[in-house]
Length: 238
Image (cartoon, rainbow, N blue to C red; front, side, top):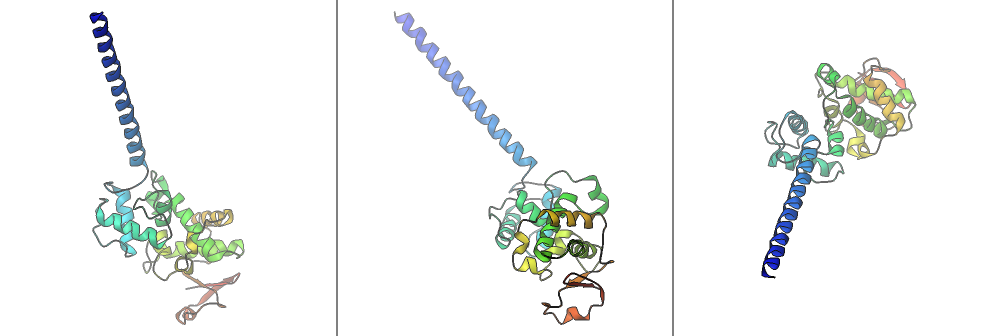
């Protein structure tokens, strides 16, 4: 009887130990998977690399980041991301996830082949450009929406402006939609199509860098621009 009791006790201990090891192994596997997925997607405190540097560069250009643009996601970058999120109505978590990346104009995936030669991230720029169109040109004819997008793209090629879509759109005091928060609205299908048409080279403005609505424009300086074309309610010029 004593031997039977001893045998059963040993069997219970072995079973419990094996189960605990299996649970711990499973937990570690889940944690490793979550960490791997996070590494492949979002940028967060501790991330390093070119994507982090892109985020830092844009936040620095817009005055949100005062620290180094070094590709290391540390305290300065974390605080800068939170300031940007707070200013643009995004979830203030200090993590560059899908929504924050789109607002900044950075693609979290692998850069497309065209990006190396054009400087434009097709998907990230198309979405951000569509948001600008939706905020600035809702109610305008389709060609007028493409024209607004073309102005943004033309500015990226002009040394007087930032050289990225996001840099142009978020340049201080550049666009009403950013100032009043309409840039955060979800763009409709037509705005997305107009953004892609503009990125593919359609420029109804013939190279203009400015547009304004003469019925609502308050800047005296804008009236010094020469008018090239009028589309819908907007005048386009240089």
